[in-house]
Amino acid sequence: MKKLLFILIAILFATLVACSGSESGSGSGDSAEGNDSGSGSSGEKMQFYVSGDKVEGAALTTMAEKYTEETGTEIEVVDVPYDDMVTKITNMMRAEEPPALARITGFNPAWQGKLMDLTDVAEANNVRAEMGITVEDELVAPPLDLTAVGMFINKDLFEEAGVEYPTSEDNIWTWEEFVNAIETVTKNTDAQYGMVMDNSEHRLNAFLYQHGSKGFYQEGDEYTTNEETTEALQRFVELNDNTIMPKAVWTAGEDASSMFKSGRVAAYMSGSWQISDFATNITDFEWQSVYMPYEEVRATNLGGNYLVGFEGSGQEEQAKEFIDWLYQKENYEELATHGGYLPVTTDAEVEYEKAPEAYEIYQDEIAATDPIASQQRNELVRKQLVSQRALGSVLAEEMINALNDEQAVEQAVENVKSQMTEAYIE
Image 1 (cartoon, one colour):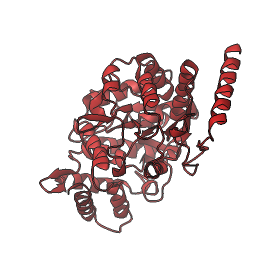
Image 2 (cartoon, one colour):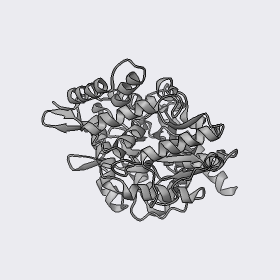
Image 3 (cartoon, rainbow, N blue to C red):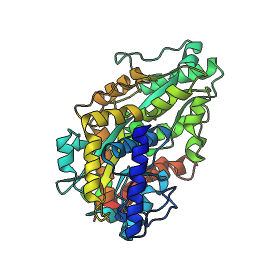
Image 4 (cartoon, rainbow, N blue to C red):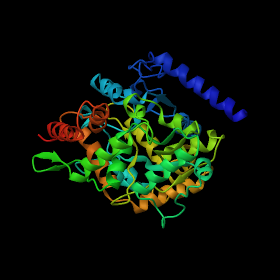
């Protein structure tokens, strides 16, 4: 209590001193509609922009508070809606009032040349730089956390139906075997659907890789793909038959996670970020992480968030000090534990408090995955920063049109190739 009182007095004193010299320019930071004048240039608080749920956002807030206790440097964690993050920061940068730092998943070309080089921080803390974004030999966006696509099942439904599921890497399903299994579950239980998959290009790409797709890649002066991509996408459309998979998840934005939590869905293709939530909040049935099915190669899809610091915030040095502190072994292990992260530092030893066996399966999936899982993602994210214009989830958008019978899968593939060529090849 005495320590807390001391900190509050110190903060109050610092605020009074700052106010006596100049007006405060900090914004409210309540949402993406907050006052953009609240950049770190005010000299009071470093603003850390985050799009987070209760678990991940709370983990970063906890670490920011710990840093303030240790150093006296105040950090305001500003929660910005995921869909608004890149646009908001881009507008702030154009107004020359960027935040000090942010946790992001995507970029805008307007950011090029305005991100801090964090190479030395990554090297000092054993951060896996190959998972970050490097531009002209500068690591401008090291990874903050690692996620991977994976499969969850409703264990109760499988056992009620008498259907076995993989318990080791020696008996992994093919996709045909998996579909047969979930069809049996739905026939022999009150399950409404065999599976759901997040309405996400990230999840869809894992499905494609497992069928032998090489994704969309540059060949000469255009983007292309291999025939397995079209075949896998056609299979995906066929699975969305409102029996095996509900079409409304992709076409109408139904919440796949809520559907699985209802207990009426046999399997859910999502990812490691769900583990902590499921372990805490699913109480009506037993769930389990299982190895994903595959046809040609085993593949997950790696994702996660990047950590960036912005030039022009007026707090570059302080931001870099905090980033360095956050990656230090003890602090990063604490962050990963709170957030349920798969670590991105080579020496981290994370003891997960909830469902540790599920994290082991994800680590196995990552170790066995085809290299394309990380190559494709990093290359396409990097293109968002270094290209002339940003391109969103074009594959997902085109597949929604295909699912709505507005175009054939073949046309969707051609549209993706042409849009990527136009956006990424000068």
